[in-house]
Length: 160
Image: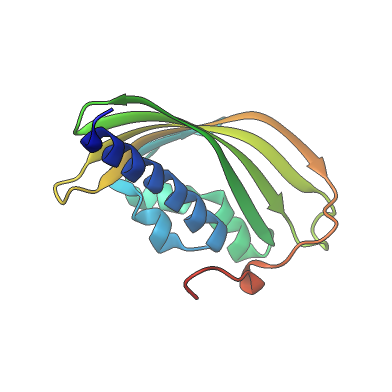
């Protein structure tokens, strides 16, 4: 691989990683910055969402945290596959495991899910890579009792 391809691959990987950091830190701004304005998203079992405002409004993690139904989440990014890269557009498949812990008064079981994100990205006019299409696939899921869970408000992150 040449240097430009390696740099593009690293930048694309960073967009996906920033999405997970944004979701898990409760930062709508960080998540929004990962998507193109005309983003199209398809989640398992849900109608497609089109446009940045619709997609941001459909993110259930943010909804659940706002309603007090979710205490904390953590997405572990696993395999990252750059399926195609042509300089201005790319396709990726990213495997992830999500841990979602509700407040104990809501549920004493956390959800653990095996996910895949199939993304199409394009280079914006300013050179940034943005996700323009996403397919969110739930491969497996189970519940288990958490032994301990901090809250999102108490999570210590770099840069704070």
